[in-house]
Image (cartoon, rainbow, N blue to C red):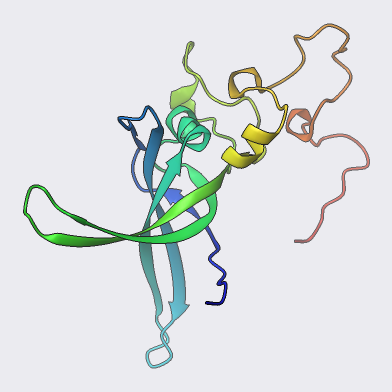
Length: 182
C-alpha cells in the first residue's frame, strides 16, 4: 500500500469556548470549533455571497493546555494537523456514527489576545502581541520555557529598559520604520 499525505492548515475564529476534559488515562483533550468564512461573487447575479464552515478540532496534551488557558470564543487561531475520520456507537441513541475532525499538531494564537474586558487584574493571558505557536511535539522535544514563564523578560536581572527584547514590545514609532505594501 502506498503512503499518503494527510496535512491540514486552517485559520479562522473560535466559534465557542474550548471544551476541555481529562480522559480516564489522565490525558487532557480540548475540543474546539474553528469558524472559517469565505466569500465569492455569484457569476450569474454578480452578488457577493458568503458562507461559514465550522470545523471541529481536537487537541491533546500540551496543545489542550494552551486551548484551555488562552482561547476564548471569537479568538483568531491557526491550526495545523491532520484529518481524522472515526466511528463509534452512540450510547444515548444506539446509532452508529461517523465523525470527521482535525487532530491538531500545533496551534498558533493570532492577534494580540488583549481585549478591554480582559484587562482586569488576576486575568491570565499571554503577554505577547504577536502570533504565538505552540506545538505538543516541539514542547516535548525542546528545552523551551513553560507557558507560565512566557512573556516579557523585563523582570530578569541584566536587562535594561531601553533594550527591545522582541517586536511585540516595539511600538513602531521610531525613525527608520518602513511601510511594507503587503
